Each structure stands twice: as C-alpha cells, then as structure tokens.
Picture 1 (tube, one colour):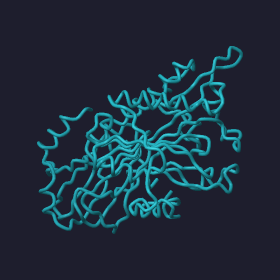
Picture 2 (cartoon, chains in turn red, orange; picture 1 turned 60 degrees about the vertical axis):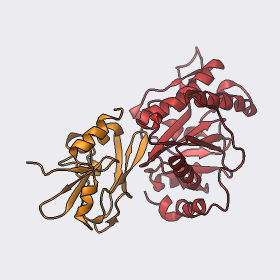
Picture 3 (tube, one colour; picture 1 turned 90 degrees about the vertical axis):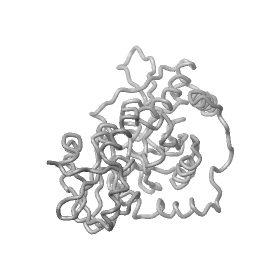
Length: 241
Length: 128
C-alpha cells in the first residue's frame, strides 16, 4: 500500500501514468477500505491468514494466485476525470485481449443483489471483467477475472485491481473462484502472454509504449515508503472499521 | 437569502455563518461525479482539520474519495445523520447535506478559495 501511495505521489509530481504489478508472498487477504474487520475474522477459511487493508474500496481479495496492479493517473489526465473512464480503459483492454484468444469475455452489468458479498470476486459491479464458458447443459454463469477500485486523491487517482490468474488451491466454496488458467484451459505460465497482450493494449490506448522496469518498484532505503508502510502495517489502520 | 459559498478546487464548499463558524460540504458537481454513494467517514467533534488535508472519506460503488478541508480549524459539529442518509448529499448538498462545521483558525483563508463564478468556470470546463 505504501509503495502504491509513493507511486501515486510520483505520478502526481511528474505528470506520468505509472503502473506497478506485483504478486503476494505469503498468501494474504486484503480488505476494502470500508470492510469491517470482524467480517473477515468470521470467515473460517481465513483463520490465521495475514490481513491487510487497502485504501481503495470493494470486497476482500485472497492474494497468492492473482496479479495485482496499482495504476496512478494524474488528475489532469483525461482518464482520471470520471471514475468510469479509467475502469473502461483498463478493463476494456483485457476484454479485447481475452476475446482475441477465443474467450467469451465482457464487461459485467451491475448486480446489486451481490453488493454485500464478502469476497470481491463474488460481487458484480458495472464494468468488472467476466468470462462466460459455453455450457449447453447448464445455466449460463460468468466468472469474474478482473475487478478494480479507485482511491481518488486531490492530484492523482490510484486504481487498484486484481487479475485472477488461477484458482487459489487453499480456498473452497464461496472463497474459491476460477482464474484465467482454468477458464482458458491453459497452464498458468501461458497466462503470461495474456497479461502482456493486455498491458500492450493499455499502453497503446494511451498513445504510448509500454516501458518496463523490472525488479522492485521502490527501493528499501526509500524513507518515504518505509514511513508510509508503518501506517499501513499498524493495527489502527487494519482495525479502522 | 443563502449566505455565499466559497469553493476549493477539490470541490468542497465553505460558508461563513453568522456565529463565525464555517460550514463545509461537497458541491453538487462532486456528488454527481461520485455516483452511487455507499459509505462515509466523518471526523470527531474536537478534531483539527488542516487546509488542503484530508478530513474524511466517502465511498461510492467504485471509488473512495478523500474529503479535503478548504480551510483550517476545529470541528465543532459533524452531520451524524448523513452517513445513514447519503442520498441527502444529492438532494440538498448545500443545506441538509452539510458535512462538518468548524471554528476557523483564520476566516481570512476563505478569501483564498474560489468564488461562485470562478467555481462555475472550473466545473464548466471539466467533463461531466
């Protein structure tokens, strides 16, 4: 969270659109900004799991088999003017990539009946990326593979998102959701090409190129990030709801 | 007749009341941009707010937005009914939809905010 906050401030200062991508070690559950901690503590499958709280909203996410992104867009950029525009840019790029690979991917309609679901991937907000598998013998179902949520600050918008690459092996029932690997019928390593294609489309929609910076997106001696991390690691932050 | 409001570029409004306190809320433009509101966090009475810094949060279906203090002061009242009736922000953003009332450190800070004409010009130039 601290690294995302530092990314956001750097984007605001430089006027650049910046994105960081990361995985999680160990497996961790992140709660949305307004989710109650008690609700997480009541889920038996999550007992003993590390819990963190995001500055953005939405439902709980089980991390470990997903690719998480933080995208920082300065307030002057056209994408940051309306909440839905940035979602559309990021999510439509993935829909286009998956569709070209033969998946029935689309932007979901909002389903208010699922608004109170604990897990993010059980909810359906307008614009979530879902994949529908053709199955003539069963009621149509769609599976959410990408959800995002924003934190709108004065000079920059930070959008968080989780792209589910494969089902988490330690989850079951309502906490278990198929990922790209299961839905596309490919190995997880093959999802790398989907991710690259998604990011290249996103960069192209910005009218620019994808510039990669491998390795940690912040340095361990970055005092600003270290100081911010203390706040996000504190029990006060986790227990604020 | 309504007392005049001043506005921050982050879309909060501030109004100097007869008793010297300043009422703060968010503009109709901001409420409409936020779309479906679901949660709100208000500061405690007695808390200090600092101009340009966050004093609370409001969550819509897909975004959490910080609320920024237009001027500095001490919170003397918070609209406790508002988090349970967020629709009031849309129906009456400048009346019943007020968010906090502060005792200002320096009422002169209001002069640094946008007047109605300047704010209308700002919002008229932004996509909506």
